[in-house]
Length: 395
Image 1 (cartoon, helix red, strand yellow):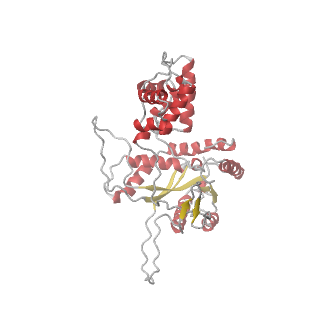
Image 2 (cartoon, rainbow, N blue to C red):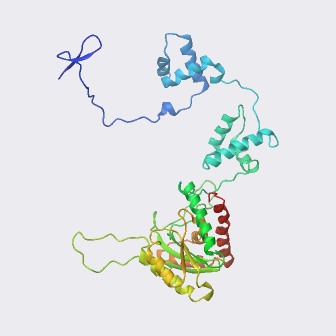
Image 3 (cartoon, helix red, strand yellow):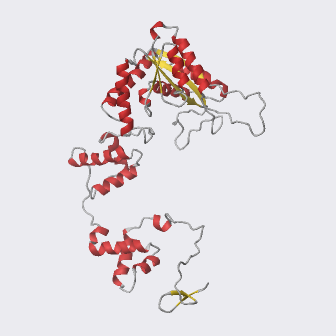
């Protein structure tokens, strides 16, 4: 079927009938431009002035023609010209006396509010982004990067720290309410982190655990040798209390089965901690606790990972006259062993690991170096968060 233009602006077929639909071939490999050299380059005031001048003095010149001649975006030139016609100062602000931040003046407090707002919502913002925010908020503000760096520490009391990633789900209203109810229930049950609780968790370690900063001559990058660029992790199971370390164990890989399998029946071996590993570890913990009468009847506290919540686990614990409690989801601050793992990993990072088989011993040595007072501190840290949970605050 062929279609024609009938001279009146209409598209018709050979019988003069309008087509129902016209399908145009569309390039399946079409790209959407996000930015380009033209769009990305900042334009000086001189270029802006020239573009606006050419559009203004030559009525026949369209903004599009001027833009193309200057290799600019047509819409950008149109926007400049419109802004200039409405208010010339909006495009080319007059230069007055620059505003300087006096540490004792009102501007210091006003700028601190802007700084606090920016870094509260976007902690990873750069100094350049902060400077842009300040200059947009305070007209004619004059401040150098060097001064801004100094003010961050001395005037606004901000320091650069390692960021901590937090899941979006961690502090939703539902999670906060769940923690509040958990703390209330724990208190009613007689849970006492300092006297009758053992905290259980798993952590991953690998040979490439290193400090992220090192010393080197000026102009050079510190190089640290590692076994491989991507080292395999090993899983360590641990149990602590406010009185000290209970047990730390290495999860050994499940050996391959010697049974013959039918063709196509091979099953991929899991690399993580499986329920049987966890059952054995819980049994080992209770065997250790049985040696100390003061630990009888203690609470075994762990997160609600699937392998922890297997009904076999709780049944086994209660049969030994201990009690099992699962933490609410996304609540690592309520498990003191998280602080223990952090200290152990810091100790491991100090070692130069160039052999895989020495990693378990390094972990054991780092665990044994943690002082008894530190274990009390780990438990006390979590107890302090109970008040935040009861007050409905995020943690």
